[in-house]
Amino acid sequence: MLSGCDAVTTMKDAQKPIITPLLPVKGLRHDEKGDLTADAMKTIEDGLSSLGINSESEDAQNAILLETRQALCNLNAQYQFLLTTFFMSIRNSEPLSAKVIELIQEKNTAMRDILSVSRQILEKIPANKDGKKLVEGWTNVVAESDSKRVAIEGFNSMQNRLVNEDNLLKEKRYSELQEGFQGIGEQRAFDLSEEKTRSVSANLALYSFLNVIAVGLLFYIVSTN
Amino acid sequence: MATLTNDSLKRQTDINEWYYKYRLDTLFVLQILFLGLSVLVLLSVMSSYRLISPMFVAYVAVFVFLTVFLVWYFKYAFNKSTRDFYHWDKRRFASDGNVAPYVTAEVRQAMTQIMETSCPK
Image (cartoon, rainbow over all chains, first blue to last red; front, side, top):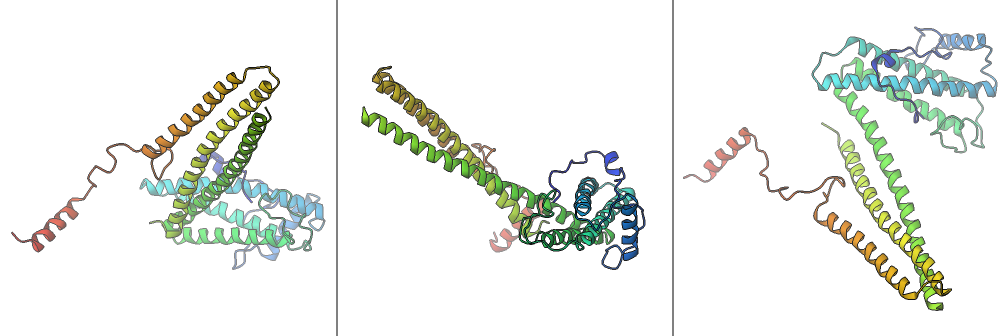
């Protein structure tokens, strides 16, 4: 879902606020599950309405989802950079910066809010059967018979991960947080290595076939002479 | 300490990377062979139209097959004798495995005590 986003490489970039109409104000209220409450959702919908966006229409919903992806991309890049900085401080036995921890929590909450908004908007869209809707702009959403369900599952799994990371940070269980963070990188490296092996195997099969054809052709030409 | 899952993933990634490079190496030999065969096919067609001598085609064929064989043999010998078993881009050195493993002073002391207890002078 978040592949192909620009990476953040400096602390200055990581601290920049992400401006999006999906998070018009700070301090939105959350329920016990970490979801935005109905009144917070109403505030966001009012903000969208004031921009002339009617979240009931299909085109507006698709535009909102594209905006969601962009905002999540930027926030996630900042979040990953801040976590990497944080883990480097732990590894170098440096004092942990309260500001960095606060920024990590802030980015985590902002991402969860955006996921919450997207999920609640998505839940208003009727389930489609052709698998075409919502696929555009969402690189990893599989075009299954019910893409809405797949997208919601993706949101839920990401939100659960963020909630878990937030809890680990609050409880100062940094080693577990780091393990999970490394696990994501290792999973990605594993997926890439699988894909590379598949690609080179396909090329190998192609060249084996071409060589067989070339040998056959050579024998044919030599035998006819 | 990393979990078993993370370790397994890391090792499987290493294995995949090794096989990827190995297949890439084989692909290189197959591509050289294909190029050589394509040239031979072209020359054979020209020879069948009496544009070039069949002996010239035979000489080129010997050169092509010898080159492909030498490329393959060099890679095979290098993989067998020099390349590391775990990391494709790493080479093995003659001294590898001959260096005594590092043992801490505490472990050495404990081992000496065990030896002295079990084999008294």
